Length: 498
Image (cartoon, rainbow, N blue to C red; front, side, top):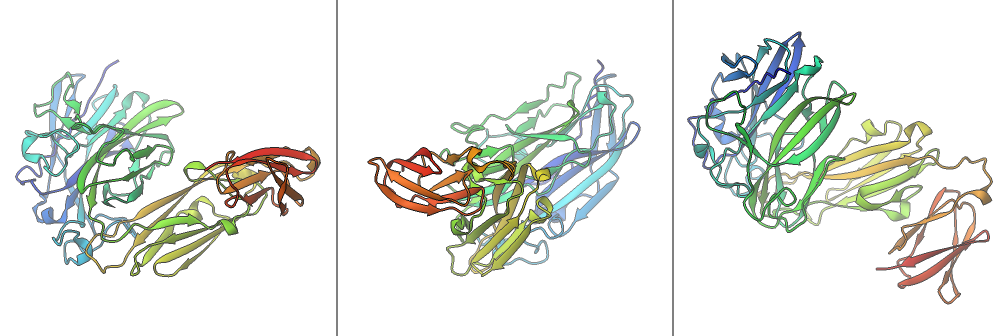
């Protein structure tokens, strides 16, 4: 199999000193027609460096089929405002580069929260269809670009790396997957942070995301062996499982995808994410994108979420943000988002309208708290998995510090319940979780009385169940031990264990 690799180098920023800068870049490509492709470099820069953008950048691509290096110049520069944000984004403030407020500056220094996105774009034509094309960043030196504030990788390495791979063997028109958020994020020290990493693909390809080591380019010129791409080793004791100081709380959930952690010190961390595309089981391409996380002193506490259990109806909370509901049964799920700051102004955003278009979501905002209630009756067509993402941001500007959004997730799993025409006595009965702590869910009993006995055979409670397919029993007042649940001549055992 022949192999063609395209290597891209941008020298647009070579004359800057990067001792205090923070920036990141990534590549995307888009199929135009035939062997012609549009290649774009996306550069995110701290606003302090905005005046230095050059009108053009250049790239070179390397044909390892014929061992020929070609050079071209990006003919288009696009400056996106404000901050390169999509319309309506709540991720960053909109004061760059015209004016700054205390909201923009966690350390009382301008330029810490505001960013500018600049794109350089041009077209390339593949001489032939053969193997993988690799779009990547190169440089004549790495040491001068080292950001000393990033402490979770090795010193003296290139820390703004971008790479995209196209499998041209498939002869399929393919566009890279696109990220919905700029990859700069802020987190409060010593508080849990959850951050959604949404990626979408116009081609409808299957996407698989993974967390990988940051990467670097060798400072040598490209060569036919293509050995210039290498992983950056983490400084001990950091690794993929613990990429920066979080005392073992770092989690990467590829199914959402999202990260969750509690950073313990003020730091700047570098993460790298890889997204692979598959079309009918065939690998068609990859995008790499780095993310910079700033952990700063807590100036406003992160918002918190709690489920209003008294209002739950046919919605069964489980582990890892899972909510189980049943087709053709009305669901009610109310959530309270709060802040312990008495000056907080919480802003609520959610994808519920897109994910559950037939649901009703009532939202009440009260400054430092937000109530959200979802009413939904799923059908059999809704059976499966639905990811709800809610973003809560404290938009108040009383203390210095950036506006840090917090993402919350509900993994709604819709199951098929037994048909209503079945004999109720023949329905299976399930109780969970078992052991339980404060709540026990009973599935398969409706319109009946349930009696609870302790291990000595003494009846301690009678519960009246409604017509719901799933009903809830509060067990918070019960001591640890074995209990019996009896209804309609059936007995089930459960444990209370805390």
